[in-house]
Length: 441
Image (tube, rainbow, N blue to C red; front, side, top):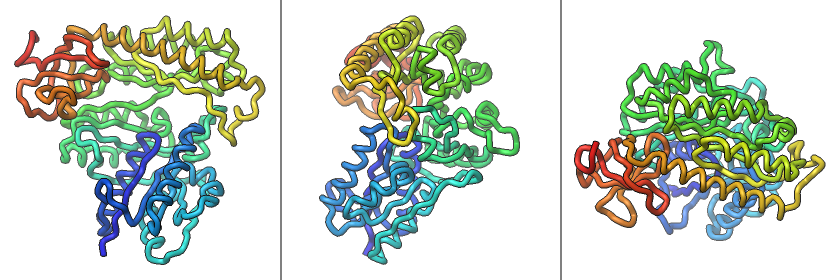
C-alpha cells in the first residue's frame, strides 16, 4: 500500500527549500503527498527555533500531529532537533527526531521508522569540515517563484542568535551546481529565483576557487536565464558596489535589498556582536538609493535588547526615520537559552519590549507608504502570481522592487513577467495596468 505523507514547514526560506527536497525524495520513493483534510501515514514537521515563539509553534505543531494522527509516524526534523534534541525526545508520540546535520538522510530514516515500528533518534553534531549537502529539486509549491539554497551555516555568533548552533559551519554549493539547479528551474518555467542561505553574504568563503556571492551572480548573469534573480538577506558589510551595480542595471537582478540593522545604537550593536556602526549602515542605504532611486530596502530591527534604554531605542528610531527605507521587519527581543544575551544584565520587561516594537512597526508603516507613493506613475516589471482575490478580471503579482501589485492585464490569462504602470495605492497594494494595453507607457 502506498504511504501518504504531509510536511509542515516553519521558519525561513531555507527550510522551505529543504522541505521541497523531502517532498520530491519521498515521491520518488513511491510515497504520495496527502490531500487536504486527509489523514497522512507520516507527518513531518520541519522545525524552527529562531525565536521563543517559533519554538513554541514548532512544539504545538508536533503535539497537534501526534494528537490528530493516531498511529501515524510523526517526525520532528530541522533546527529544533539539532539544538534541543532532548526537549523533543520528551514529547510522547514522536517516532523520528533528526537534526539539520542529517537532513539528507530523513527520507530513508522515515522509511525505516515506518517499517520497523521503532522510535528513531538521529543525532549528530556538525563537524568543522562538514560539506554542503546538495539537495536537488525540480519544483516548489509556488508555481511562479522558486527558492534556491546556495549556502548554509553561520559563524557570526551574534549574542542573541541560536542559529549558528542549529546550522553549523559556513558551507556553500559550488557555482557549477548552482548553475545546474538554475537550469533545472528555467526548464520548469519559473519567472523568479530567490537565492537564499543562512548567511548568504558569506557564500563561497569555504570554496577553493575564490568564488564569492558577486562572482556567482556574475556567472548567473552570463548564462542569460529566462528568469530574474532576487537576493535574500545580506548583512551591511556584504553588499559591495558590484552587486549594487548589477541590481541597478535593470535587467535580471532585482533592485531589492533586505539588510539587517537590528539596532541604530552603536553600543547595542557592539553588545549584539554586530560588525558595523549606525553611520556605516546609513552610508550603505544612501549609496543604494543614490544609484537606484526606486530600489526596495527592507530592514530587520530588534526591539528591547538587553541594555537598550530609552535613549538607545530613540537612536534606532531616529536613524530609521532619517533613511529612505522601504519597510521594516520588527522583532521583539527573544531571550534564547544557549545564547550569551540570555544572561546579559539589563533585561527589559515584556511591556517595554512590546511598546517599543509597536512604535517601530508604526514607523515601518509610514516608511512603506512613502515608498509606495514614490513608485506611483512609474513602470515596473511584475511577476504574475495569479488572479486578484477581490476582482478576478485583474491579476496580482510582485514587482522587481518588491511591490505587491494588482493590475489590469492586456490578456485575461497571463504568465511570466510583464511591465505595469503604477497608478494608485489601494488596500495595501499598488494598482495599475499592463503597459501596452492599459494606460500610458
